[in-house]
Length: 250
Image (cartoon, rainbow, N blue to C red):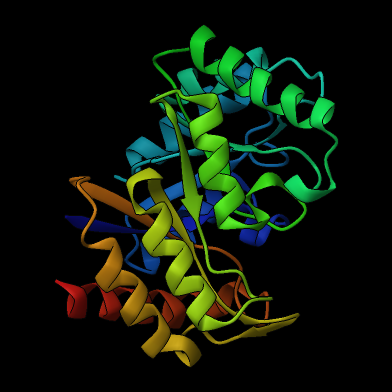
């Protein structure tokens, strides 16, 4: 298992594609997850082509495309997939509805499941990765596991992240249970609404990475998402923390 350190571009929505590439490279990171809302809008062919060229020239990889496609919403995912393919990305982040499974009626839940089955079948060459987030089916990892079983498609996985509203023990149980389905990870240290410097949760992340190393995947992107102070100037120090963690986990 090799962990790949990178940056989620929407950490700095106000920066340009070129600026994101610049700070990512200077921080010694290896990858960028481009967001589909600002930096590489879904369906904007010119933006995708430009981002691919600039990212490749900088020697950075693009492990996933951070889309805002919501399962069961009635949206068309074609523009999102088109942009991902232009970027040369085969992993697309999606959202499992817009409420927790317990809040969904059976009809709404079935619609979300059917949409997941549909897009996974329609695009077998794309791996769709669920965002682990509150107010979606993934709010409870037990519901997410059931969702994977209900959909039953090998090209449906997840981008794991700790739930800042739950206990550390709950997050340990979550990452352990979801491990077979985890493609990549969004990395941050939060407690509730408090965004902390990344090293504040060094001990917790040591446990997460120890579990993640048990994955059968050959590589796994670890993507920094948001700085504790939202300042680009904090990225180098934050990236250094992540790289130290990776080295310690080897």
